[in-house]
Every structure is written in structure tokens, then in C-alpha cells.
Figure 1 (tube, each protein chain N blue to C red):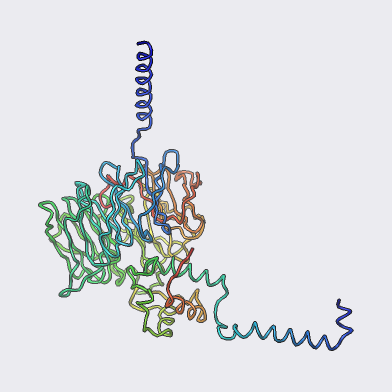
Figure 2 (cartoon, helix red, strand yellow; figure 1 turned 45 degrees about the horizontal axis):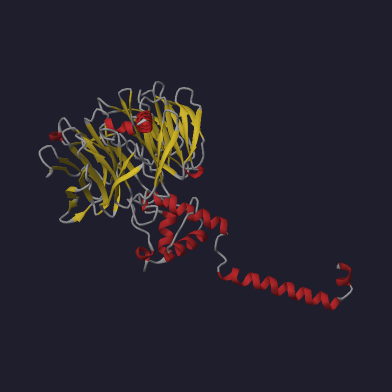
Length: 122
Length: 393
């Protein structure tokens, strides 16, 4: 097989071109959302959101000592602002900074996901 | 005639067998308990003598934050769910007797000294609602009003002698006593300016002192129930010594089990320390460095050990403090998310929820060895029926 390919330069070009477009095809959607965490990390972040943010905001995010974080509560709030609150915390309140374990890229994804709602850790 | 006689004898024998069978099945409930299955809205009813599961009870709503009190005869568990659900469960049969959804967002509850009233502490609507423990019909509604109409989330609800309930107002910085001794229309006594953001409260095992933890301040608020006229006294003032507090990824819980050797063991806020305060002078006696932000500091019933669990992200560790030497004698690593512990009534075992491993572990508190573990789905709170006879629990 390899031998046959190397005997045909024209086919080589075809295959190279094919590979190029294949790579392009994969890289295009990745470019649009290049900061989305890997699926495994996404699951970890959802687990963190439900279980640990849930300690104060409720496991269903409908609020506890901390405010509710359901889509209707977050509606109209700026994503950058929400990201900063999560990463830096709110001094003078119990909200701690989460930047020790969540990156900027991850928090942007998390905020988008929270605004979508229907979050399930199972 | 002979046939009739035979049948009669047979029926009599069968009845005898059946009744002796049910007698053999009868049991007490003093060694029973309830384990909350956080994610599935169910509970397991367990017994601590042979360490087995007896019943699984489903349909209790959102138990993401749940607590339990027991009827004075230790037969019924009142389960308080996050969604405001109040469910009365017969722990001998594993059946739900009655269930009401009394609020939108609840945090916990208490049962009165005479066992006739069950109170629920609500975030939404902010306040305390009180129910007849037989019927779960509401007998009193106490909105936590402050600043001319605002409603505060209520925390740290406990029962106290004289058929009283005590609780604190998170948003308002107040502690209220609701006295039900005369009638179901409570007499309310309010203590204002107790400090910023009380997040939980406990009553000492002798039911004399109520202590509210303050998130917003470097200290705690204490009320002597023998002398309520003296008002709130600040204790452990400045225990953080002005240092910048560490971030708190889960609020500590205060429970009336943390008294040992004449001292009270309290989780510090924003410090990796357990604070030891004298229960007579209310001065700091010691502070014990621990693994992380403590969540529960619970004393073994004999007061010789205090077991401590921790907030995220250090919640995979459990530590044991020897009260005699005030030092850590054991550090366990049972798995991620150790959410709660409960001693058996005389303290020979401790049951520990390890959420992310879906098990409850049981330790021998003398040898500090693990005895067994039981599979439980996302376990959180563990509540044994002996709580029925303790004030504040």
C-alpha cells in the first residue's frame, strides 16, 4: 500500500490535500469555541458548580445563603462581570475567589452554561 | 366434627404462630438512624447494632441541604428538605406518614421540648414556621421582619428549655427567642445588633448558652438563657487577630455536640483552626491547627475526642483531636467530600458520609480502625434517633 502510494505522486498530492481539508474541517469549529474545556473537564466543572457552589447557592442553584443562580436570575447580567465575581469573589461577603481552581477560559464556558440552565451533575 | 376440630386447632395454631412471629419482629428504635441521600431525594434507615440498612424511603423532594429531628418516642423522623418540604417518616416501617411543602427554601428545623411542635427555618420566605408534630398543620408563622418590612433568611434554629425556639437572622444580624410555653401564639424576644452575618447557631448541651457564629466579624455572639436580660455578649472577639481571613468554600456548621472537657470546640471562620473556648469564662483556651477550613467539629459523647471535617477543596480528610492533649492524633483520607459524621449514642462508633465514593464508613472510635462501610447514594447528613433526647438537636 505504502509502496503504491509512493509510486503515484499525483495521488500523494490528493491525499495531502485531503488531509489538509480534513484538518481544516476539524479546526474550524474548534476555532469558534477554542476556549471550551475538554468534555472531561466540563463534567468536573459541572460537578464543582452543583456540589460546591451548591453548598451556598443550593444544589439546584435556586439559592441558599447565597443568591439563586438560575437562568432567570442571571438574565441581563454581563458575562464578564459574572466571570469576575466567580474568579475573584466578592470581598465583604462569603463569596470566595475560585481562581485557584478555575481558569479564565473555563469560567467563560461555565457562565454561558449557567445561563443556559438545565444543569445536571449525574 | 373431627374435621371441624382439626380446622379449629389449625387456625388457632396459625394465629399463635403469626402473633409470636410479629412479637419476634417487634423492635425498639433507639439504635436506628437516617442517612440523607443528597442527590436522589431519598433516605436510608439504618441500625447501628449490626450496622445494616433497613429501609430506603423515596420521594422526599430536594434534600441537597437536609436535616432531621426525631419525635420524643424516637419512632418518627422529621426530615427538613431544601425545597421547604417537611416529611414525617415512621422509621420502624420505613413509610412516609405525612409530607407538606411549607416554604420555598428551607435550611433546617427543631422540635420543641414537649415534642408537640416542629419548627422550620426558612430562607424563602425568610422566617420560621411552626407545625403540630402530629398533623403537620401550621400553628404559627414568624416572618423574620427587619428594617420595616424586609425579610431575613433565618439560621441556627434550635429548641430551648421552656418550649422555646431560638434562631438568628442572617441578613439582619439579630437573634430571636420564640416562647411557646403559654400558647401557640409565641412571645417573641428580639436581640438586635448581635454582629454581622450570623451563619449558624448552637445551644450548649446543657441548653444554657446559645452561640451564633458570625461570618462578617471576628467573633461570636453568645446569649446566656439563664439571664437573657443581660443580652448578647461577644466572645472570641478578634480571634483572627486582624489577619486577612482565608477564603471559605463551605460555611461551617455549629452543632450542640462540640462541648468536651468543660470547653467548647468551634470551627474558626477563614482560618485552618479549631477554636477552644472555656464554657465557664468564655475565654479562648487554645486553638488547634487543622488540615483546612473546619466544617463540623463534633465531640465524642464522652468528650475525649473531637472529630473534624473540612470544606472544599480539602474535604477528603477527616481529623481526630485528642481533647486531653489538644493535638491531632489521627488523619484519615477516606475519599472526596466527607460531608458529615455522627457518633452512636455512647460514642463507640462514628458514622461518616463519603459522598463521592457513595459510601458511609463506620469507625471504631477506640482503635480508630474502620469497622465497615455501607453503600449509600451520595450520602450527606447522618442522624441517629438518640438525638430525640438531646436539646438543641
